[in-house]
Amino acid sequence: MTGVVIRSTGSWYEVRTDQGETISCRLKGVFRLDETRDTNPVTVGDRVTVSSEDGDWMITAIAERQNYIVRASPKHKGARQILAANLDQCLLIVTMANPRTSTGFIDRFLLTAEAYHIPTHIIFNKQDILDPKGLKKQQYTTDIYTHIGYPVHLVSTYTGQGIEELKELLTGKTTLVAGHSGVGKSSLLNKLDPALDLRTTDISRITGKGMHTTTFAEMHFTAFGGRIIDTPGVREFGLMHFLPEQISHYFVEMRPYIPQCRFNNCMHDNEPGCAVKQAYLDGHIAEERYINYLTMMADYKANYKHWEE
Ligand SMILES: Nc1nc2c(ncn2[C@@H]2O[C@H](COP(=O)(O)OP(=O)(O)O)[C@@H](O)[C@H]2O)c(=O)[nH]1
Ligand SMILES: [Mg+2]
Ligand SMILES: [Zn+2]
Image (cartoon, rainbow, N blue to C red; front, side, top):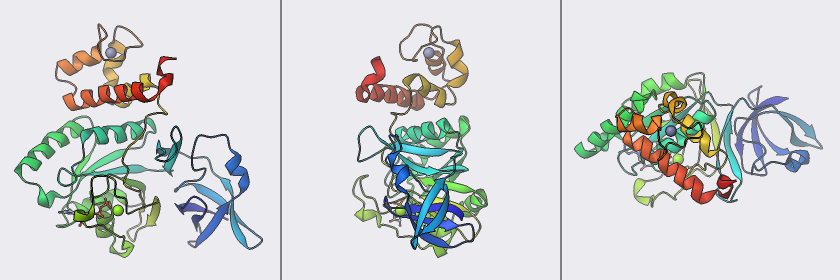
């Protein structure tokens, strides 16, 4: 039998079979011996083959992934955790209200999504509580992203603003929903399909960015015909699986300038004849994006020693 992994706890995997039944499975030992740096050999969204052995369901084969999205493992330094596989698109949920999402976080997520060619929409939630200052900040930020081709949607799970539009976007697709804890991911999914009945956390109980109510990524089948993967509040996306010289290629607006740099190993910082920096100075690349790029490069240097090798 074949199906899709909808939830994984590390030792048990829930699989929704193509017949529409949900079964709990274990993983055949052979997959654990794999020489990978991944902390999880099977992830939500994986297409698998299952068979019954001595009354237990076992995953016996994993289909090749079309794509996947990863982060640095929060527990094991140097290892990576595959968050989800076989995605049609990502929704990055952010808000300029409480807890405000930084463009640094947005850009890290976009970098990962670009690297794996997964189209991403940015959803600005909590429209109902933005004050004039928040609205101004939001306008400034949405302009940056729409200008470089990322679709932006303004929504409120409280008033219902933008919800129908999102439903259309999700119908018939497998979508990863990501964003900090407290931005309203679970509330949004409940609004899209009340039958999901996901737990939400009162904002007053969310301290900083460390609170996680969703412990594991999980795929939901919605009434309107979409597959949605809800993820734990993702704090950080690690960069360790990228080469430093690749990073600028995943900043879409930098791409056309890169071939015009004087040195073909230009890192677009202080090298003479850098076309990317010139484009920034000429106002063709947003300051926040350029600064976030430099911050990521500095971060990379500080954290990954093989940089110099
Ligand atoms: N004002 C306002 N609050 C919201 C909105 N959506 C969610 N919230 C609140 O934000 C908090 C966190 O929501 P939750 O869905 O648990 O966030 P998650 O951690 O991203 O899943 C809860 O107190 C929600 O009631 C919204 O559109 N407007
Ligand atoms: Mg949640
Ligand atoms: Zn350059």
